[in-house]
Every structure is written in C-alpha cells, then in structure tokens.
Image 1 (cartoon, helix red, strand yellow):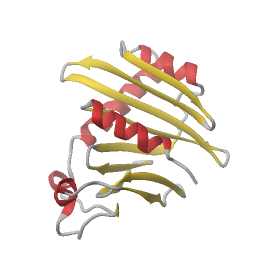
Image 2: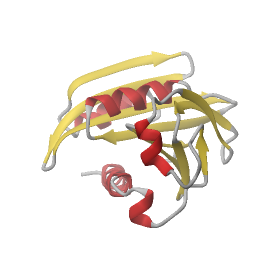
Image 3: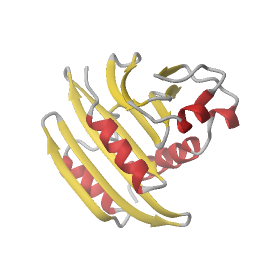
Length: 177
C-alpha cells in the first residue's frame, strides 16, 4: 500500500469518527448556521421543521455553498465541517495527497471496491460518487472538486444513507465564490 493510500485512509477514518459525533456529544457550540432556529433549539428543532436550502458563507475560504436550514459549520483541522439535517460534508483546499484528475480520483476509489460508481466532469472540476460495504455496512461516498480563483477545493463525505449521499452531492455541486 502506498504512502498516499495510507494517509488517505487515515484521513477518512478521522472524518468518519468526527462525522459520527454530534455537537451534543462533543459539547461544542456551532460557530455558524444557515437559517437555523434560535440557538437554544439547536439542530433537533431544525430537523423537525422543513429544511429549506440557503446559502452559507464559508469565511475560512471566502466561498458559499447551498445547504439545508439548520446546517452549522465548525473548523476541523484545515477544513470546515458542515452538519445539518441529513447532511455532513467537509470542505477544504485540495491537499498534496488529493487526486489531481478525475481519472486519479476514480483510481483512488477503486481501492474501496466500489459499486454504483458515477463520475462526471464539471465546468470547474469533477464529481465522483460510489458505494462500498465495510464492517459497519454500506458507505456512500461523495468526492467533488471545484477549481475557484486558481485554487482547488474538495467537498466530500462518507455517508450512512443514500439520502445523505444525494444531499451531500447536491450541496457540494453549489460550492462557489
């Protein structure tokens, strides 16, 4: 296994572990929200109300993304984690170990024995989704790359359901200046 593969797996495991924690479990307050109800009501109230998409600013990168009402963001190392009703994604600058092309992204996905793999070139990057089965069941992957103002950004998740995967892909596709 290459050094790149090992670092990718370590990063993904860290993302999975952090994605499984809610703000209640970590005791941290969210730093920002998009159309969220009063802070005292938290994400639980947002999940009960119909979620309407709204633009959220990701100040760390000077970007915007469309997400459901009640979505919050928090810093996670060099990325921002966005969590909302049926949505968990991380957004960050593409690192030195990130795929440099759609073909390389698909090659990286191959190490997970993917099923239902979809890939698409986009005007400013690419989109890859797939599923795989692990020890905890089916995982639903999303990897979106956007090149914005001369910088490459990754928006990604490993979700627990097809609905979360679809929501993550829809949100990541809207990443913009």
